[in-house]
Length: 159
Image (cartoon, rainbow, N blue to C red):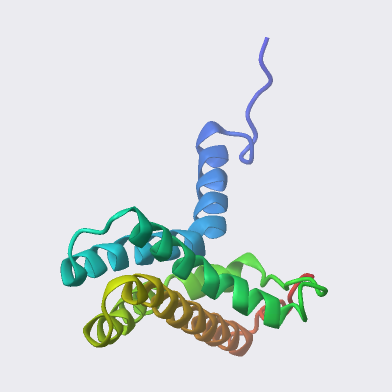
């Protein structure tokens, strides 16, 4: 015999809770994956089809931005990286279109000024760096909006 469902255990409530958790947790990653995918297409359009070395350079350029910023912001990987509460991240990442499109646009001058392996390395590095900076501005903006609306946890971070 099955137990009766409460409001919180109904299958639809469970699904909605899971959907909220997944989208809230994955939004920044989703924006980044879109950015690096379309930046690859942009680089290929300007530079032509890459060979194996260019693909490796592209991957390195996309990752180096995270590595450099994390190293600096964590004091040489010695301090924990803080995380905002999910309501702040939900509002911030709803603005993801700005950070993705401006990050992509930032790669274009690099591709017009440089070519070959250097372009394949630096275009994703610049796009990713711009994306991370703008994503941070969007988070600060969301924090400020939520704080002004009376959310006492808007500017709290863990870590």
